[in-house]
Length: 184
Image (cartoon, rainbow, N blue to C red; front, side, top):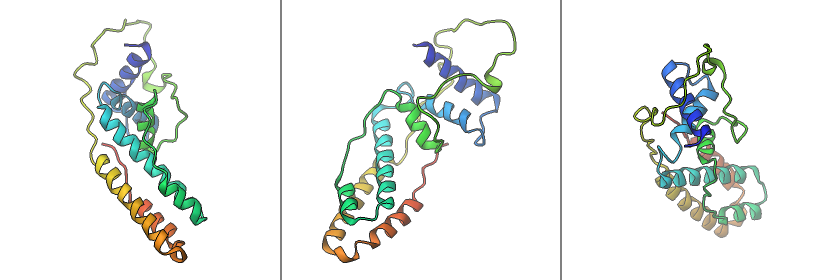
């Protein structure tokens, strides 16, 4: 276990236990979520489904920003598999909390995380065991499947009715507004 991983686990447990981790403190929630999204507490398939949802949401966002039908049809056809970057836990935390923090995140201590005594306790292996449970991802696989079906339907719709293709953007904006990603 690396020094950064131990530091991240310590900060997540300390913030969660201290009561300082509230929804108003986005940085502390980001740190707790980033630790819960690591491979130790989350399955890789769940991470892939989550990152796939993030990629689809980004594509939907790009589609609502374009006005040219040809560009929109190319975006609908574009289907990329989610990559598993090294800092995927931070990417998951940033997207889940809509934090828009600079990545990779610097794990410098702040506020209640700064030590108040001169005593230095050496790190103990396994001290976080049992304090952080397995992360549960609900609905991401189904959303990805439904979203891909929506893209196929929109492609068929725009191909059949090129003159009414301008209405797709309005429909996509409504779909984008109806989607909600939340954490517990």
